[in-house]
Image (spheres, rainbow, N blue to C red):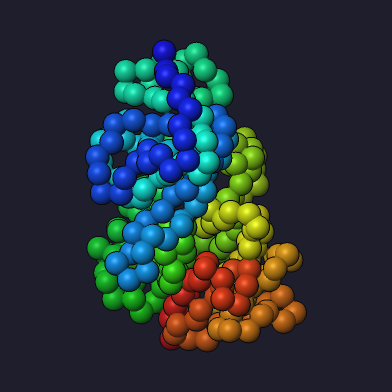
Length: 254
């Protein structure tokens, strides 16, 4: 069956831009997910820990890795190859739950990409001039938006919050609406699980802070009275701090 490995600090599991055909389930320890920027060097996108899965898409299409994954301290992992993938799903319930949760997330991501592509193909003018757009300003924010240049916001209230392993598993059977954008934050957390929402009120677009612990900043100012009306054109929101690494641009049509 699948192999169990214990690797030392600094071990590189996946390398950005390289092909890979192995997935890993973290049994103990944690890994860092980073992406290299020519301007600023390596940027931390997320940290994964016990029961998280990475590299699973290589079991399906053997594509190049979009990020580098490195051990932070000693890490114990379950190694899954294409040969033992099906067997693990059949006999290991914990591995199945983690892998299926990760795959469901990937499928939702691909669905969003298809929907946004269809909107862009239908008419570029509509995308630019008439739809509310959400863009990532910083690399961690872009990562939260699945590396797409922009998302069309057409479902309200549009929720942004911190990704939670427990919430992901519960969402399979819960009627509660999940976040539209799930941020992979790391301790000490800047983001709350239900942090803020983008809404339409009386013909205007507003950002509502959902009683987050550290607050939401809109165009450099912390929300007052929990809501802030957005101006036509470009608006910048920071999640959790005035200079948070999770910075997004909301473009409101005129």
